[in-house]
Image (tube, rainbow, N blue to C red; front, side):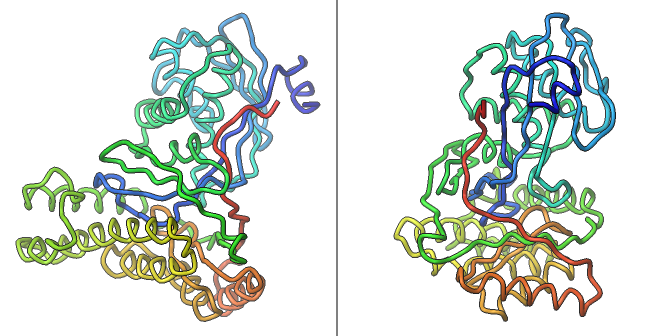
Length: 376
C-alpha cells in the first residue's frame, strides 16, 4: 500500500479486486437470450481505497498520470470522461440505487490487458463498486453488484454491453466455469479444472487491431433481432435445434440464415459442453471449441486472419480444440491442450505469426479463478 500513501498522502483502509474473464464457449448468444460459459482469470484489477468525509471521489491509476476528482452530488452521465468514467459510473449507479456510499480515494492497478477482449472495463466497474461498498461495510449480493455494474456501463459510460462479463467478474468460483442462462437469469457452477486432467487452457492474445468492431457488432445484433421478428419468436433462443432447418427455410435472407444457424448451434454447443464437463469428459470438449470457431468464422463472419491462423496452427500443433473468444474482429483465442504440449503450441503460433508478418502474440494463464473479493 506504499504506492497509495505516495499518491494520496493518507493510509489505505482496504484493497478490493475483480478479475477479467474469458468465455469458454457461447459467443454472441447473450443478446439472443442464450447460454454462456465464462471463467474468471487470475488477471485482475485491484482498487486500494480510503474513505473521505467531503463527498469527493479522487481516482488515480498506476497506468495514468495525475489524480481525477469528482463530487458525488454532481455526478451525471457525461460528467466524467475517459477511463475515470468507469469508477465514476460505479459511484453514480450505487447512489442512484440508494446505497449510502461516501467520498473515497481510489488507486486502480491492473495486470489485465486492455483491448484484448478480457473484460477489463467490467472488472474496473466491479472492483470500484465493491471497494465503494466495502468502505462503508455495505454487504450486497454479488449478482446484484454485477447488474449494477452493467447498468453503469450502459447508462453512464454509454456502452450497450450484456451482463455476462460482470456476472463472471463477480460470481465465478475457483476451479469452475459459470453456466449463465440469460433468459432464466440463473447461474450454476460447473467443475472446470484442466490441470487435474493434465491439460491446460491457453488464452492467446493475437494482438490484432479491432477492425470496425462497434459497427459490425451492432449489425450482427440487428440481424439476429430482425430474424427473430421474421420468425415470430421473442429471441433466437426460442428456436430448438430440431426446428432449425424449418426456421432457416422461412427466412428470406441468406445472411440472416447464417446468423441464425450460428446462434442456434452455438447454444446447443454450450449445452453439450456442460454435459461433458459434468460427466468428467473435459478432453471431449475440444471438438466443440473447434466447431464453434468454424461457425463464428463462416456463419457469423466475425473472425480476422490473426484469429484464424492462431486457431488453425494450434490445432495443427496438437491442440484438442481451439476457438476465438469474445466479440470478434480481434482479441483472443482459447485452446485446450495437453499440459506437456503448452510450449510447443505457443511456439508454433509465434512461428506462424512471424511468417505472416503479424504482431507477436502473447499468452495468459487461464486457471479458473474466483470472482471479486476483498484482499485486505
